[in-house]
Length: 458
Image (cartoon, rainbow, N blue to C red; front, side, top):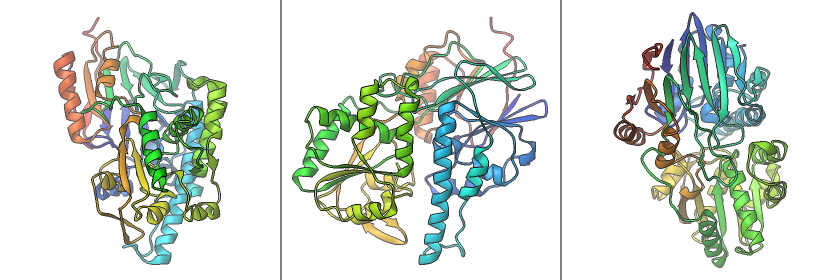
């Protein structure tokens, strides 16, 4: 079996891994490149092989850097199955439709206002492309081994991280290959810990936080402090948030803080129709997370759901303290960028930036101290207080990744460290080599490797 790294190699985005076995081709994850322009340009590259030669796609989870390239392949002729957990299938339906719609809107906005370097600006894909992609989704339950091709089976296990996230074990021609996807945290208050795995011939492990540990500070204490400080200034706390996972974790903590009377009874707005739809799935997939029915209902009701564009525009006229949670999580698009234009120039407000911000994104520029960011062709000054918040991450940190790796009863024949910025991946590589004594490397973009049977191991 041969594997080619088509993304998330030397970077934290664009997860795509192509497996070739006996003239069959399977893609594990199908993600968009995000962040730096030179990475985003890869989204327009021709695919590695004719799309008609691709037999199946398997998704670890729904985030766009793992699923968002799917409509491009479908537009170019892919008609095979796309396997994922039931919750991931539901989430992908929400995310891809929103992504296609958003790309159309941004292209139209750029053309109307003339700030694009391209004439005309074109979306990478459309909402119609996304609709066609959704017809290919095939739900697969956790812990049920499924033969997706002759002599090619997959087994999904819970990965924590977000609703529906899974590790993917592939077995073909006697070779076992495990993809970690994005690993969640063992003590996440909403999601279960990632399930341990005892063995695999080859392993791909993510390294988003491979070079650091998450702060020990309580996220609720930090949230309460920031909101109280901003409220005393009569300001608004704006939180760019991923619609899937991050928004729900934020709302859970805000619900708890209101229950404890640790923050004022100020209005909380969830300004993302997509996040609104996602939040309701937590009640449907109650067995996929830790929350009790009461806490899940409280999380789902703590915020006012902003659906219409008119309501979103009116939020920018808010003059009393409030919390606004809006997509996207790295401020690369969506409704949050309109709020940034309105709120970032005012020093009474706070920009609370939770979780990892990929290099080249607006979120990364803001937490790096940029005096302004470019939005819709204009420089918007950043005078609001900026508060990075890593305590809300849904990714395992370096120690937690190592803890998960120690669950293996025998070392893989080789481990590939993926889905991380270069330093994070290399630091984790060294730890795995020194502390575990495993054979390990960091692959390069478009590198391909031959995976052979591990007959020498007991």
